[in-house]
Length: 280
Ligand code: KIV
Image 1 (cartoon, rainbow, N blue to C red):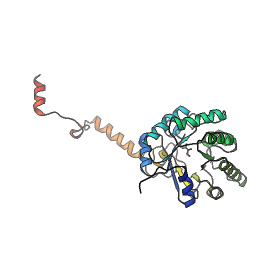
Image 2 (cartoon, rainbow, N blue to C red; image 1 turned 30 degrees about the horizontal axis):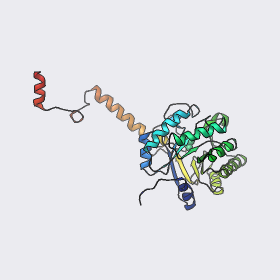
Image 3 (cartoon, protein in one colour; image 1 turned 60 degrees about the horizontal axis):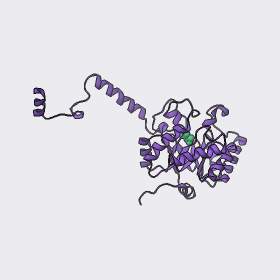
């Protein structure tokens, strides 16, 4: 059967059928093409962009304009995957109006299919306003990197019964508000399993164990392109940084010893033309 575009109903169908949802991040055209062509269900233009591509210390400095610029490039490469734009810090906290306007930019300017925003109770009204504008919303609970300062560092969330219950209650509120799915980041497996069982909408885990309805990873972590630090939950399926760095060293060495470019990588003109040229 010819591959169909993955739509919002695909999320619900997969949960109903007990099939896993696959999601990866992308920030530019070539990576988005690879992710899309590999058959991944959904691409998230994550604000992890700030750390793995733009070199910021955290996701906090990422701006709307940076997100839109990168989302547009990803859109150009994405034919089948469901495309989600990640709303950066302070693009949805100031007012409902501003949040709706910024969510709208992801849809109108970048051609996204949905937006994601971090938080529970504190973003409930904003989430409803965005949904009322006809924009699908992916929730994000557990470790929420934009508020890392408030959380006191990158650490597992929901370790006590009370903290886990708070995540569950917020997940139920986000579901009630109309979110189509929720990312659970860095929560214990058993807590993620319980939340997944209680929700009708699918959960997408990152550092939340195998029982979520789907999994997401930051692609640059997963392919070994970003190794400033590698979180415990990241599995590196390949280590691209090693091969890229070897290739660069080989290039340097071959240029410095005049091995590159060789005949195979150069252009020639016919001998008689060369002769004429020499006589000019
Ligand atoms: O920004 C991001 O890449 C994310 C994922 C880790 C879920 O939010």
